Length: 183
Image (cartoon, rainbow, N blue to C red; front, side, top):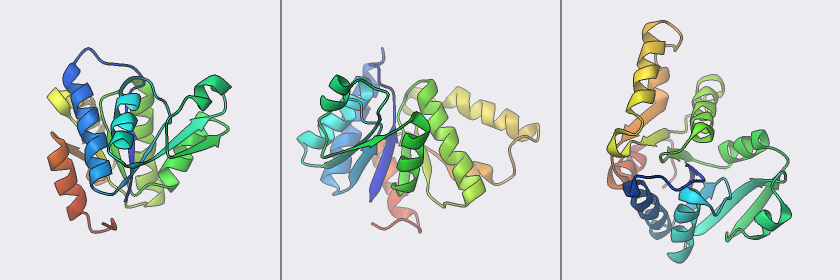
């Protein structure tokens, strides 16, 4: 299974998020899955991809050419895919992944989560988007989605395209139960 992971390219103040990124990278690799991610070796992205590689996993980094050649060459990945823009990166990741997971991150992570939710709604992808809600990180986002739903801006049923789990173990239990995913 190709598992896309969205997360920050910064190191957070909460070190539990770093531990979670490391655990997720290790679990993806040890499960024989492929990590597909934004290609950076910085922040949580670097922790996640580094651990997946250290554990013998396949790691596909998707990086826009707008980054400097030095940054692009410094990526330790199994396969590096160069794309022309951030929009093309999201498009590639959505097309080449079977499931999507969001670790804590910033605005870019929220953008990627929203992009998958919209693609699931409009293109009927049937690919799960899962928030790893460590320490309640995504609680405010989930609250805002409920407000949007209650005010009629989010269609009934759209919430089923977004799943929330509290641990890596819970994530993989959920993914193994998904009927549309090849295990």
